[in-house]
Length: 213
Image 1 (cartoon, rainbow, N blue to C red):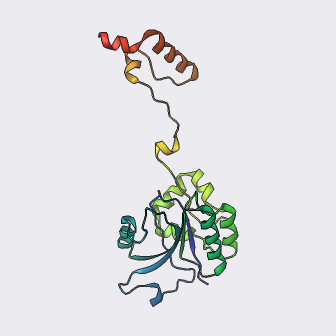
Image 2 (tube, one colour):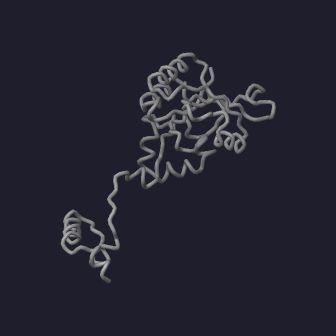
Image 3 (cartoon, rainbow, N blue to C red):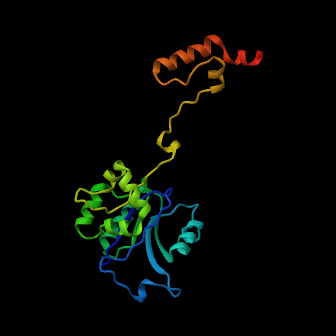
């Protein structure tokens, strides 16, 4: 049976990691008539996206010399997970599981279980050899490494990493710096300072001071 790798990742993360199977077989069945590597991908597909024709698929195929063949599920979590389990039970695995966090992604214990069974192949050496940017992230972000490396020391799936401010800190406070300037105040850094700033805004009316100057 073919072994496979898993990309545990959301749609918003644009990363493609490819690899040969464990015995590094090369055959005509793995390439198409144009010499591109065939890669079967199991993933959910929404009603608004055609995975075969969307621009990122085309970009990735051209950039990496791949011909993607998609095995799709709906975005319904229950149905997608059932289809995923049927795929795993069949023994005829896709090359990649590209799963979405809120739909059908593997749990950490699933990755370890299927890794020990030999269904999933360790990605450690493949990442080190072919994915320098991901390797750098693993080396520099200890928290990301902790959730990526299984208890046996292997990497069987790649979780999502978000480094955008609006994702990391979705709940924000906005403060009018013009008002701070008019009242000669600094940006508050403690609860007490915040209270004092709000009191000043209320009692000294920076908007009124702005209008008369």
